[in-house]
Figure 1 (spheres, rainbow, N blue to C red):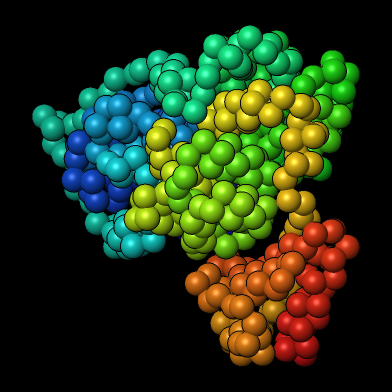
Figure 2 (cartoon, helix red, strand yellow):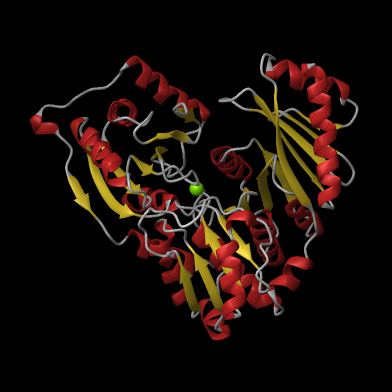
Length: 451
Ligand code: MG
């Protein structure tokens, strides 16, 4: 049985294993104490275990004196938007994001509508470990209301963005296949596409939580979507993860263009209209960077993790950003990764481009990325990374998050894991072969250190 994962992205565990009622209670009571009361938005993805977890979450919030606003099955970014809508004290998304069906978890947000950063998360987790909470007496228990309009408001917010020309997209009548993997996306993505005048073909739309395939929207998991795009002759296919913050695109030939290109496309669309700044994480493709440079726009990299990107965006007043795993962030909407946003921006871009999605993808800088890991059991990951950093100190190197080395046409990013004795090796180059070679070179160097 895997361990309970406690990280900057919240907590995740397996149902029937580490994600016990006691664990949920411990973290929710601490979170409620941290918020010091107020209203909390509670939404969940479609997982079968969702009601079990959500009921404990709501009960604990109420016991700690927080009012609960239950918005039902929604994307994680919808919870963020609803915090702003209700001016709530915080929010909880009950989800294990892209993890398989046996997992569930909690993502915490505060009154800013953003996730807790490392410092805030540590405060909550320390409070949880110390058992720091307060139970209210019967007169002060929190109340609960339900609101089933959150998905609708999210759709309207996307349609109202200055970058989206709803009328023009509607006129184009795109034929679109949407694979929402039986996650929360089935309640928002097809509905959004219809409002954009698309002819929509859905697969795995029912939000049953019984995922039709491995839910992470990686190319190898999009076979069904690719086939459907070819079968119906669609202009484009979209896949989202169960909590709808990541979006992957399949082109008109049924070929996945890779999650990295969801963000690169968004960056290009925004900068083609407006000068501004962009923030992406250290592991995001250089395609986005090249696009920003082409438009003479400032490009900054942050540590990996949505909140790190979001806070850097806030700090430098970026107008676009995100993570290469299909997570697009547009501050005009809110500072969080948002798949409905990515869908709308991609269609707007395709409309303005005029050609096919394959042609649009080909118009972007082409890179291939490979992700590997090296077992370093028995070694201190920090000293492994330090040795590599020392060896490459004369290269263009960044130690902001692990070790990132930028070469002329490629880069490699080495990061330790907080849960396993491994170092992740992410390499990008113009071709897959070169990326593999680069990754292998650094895997060998790490192996030599491990001995
Ligand atoms: Mg997710």
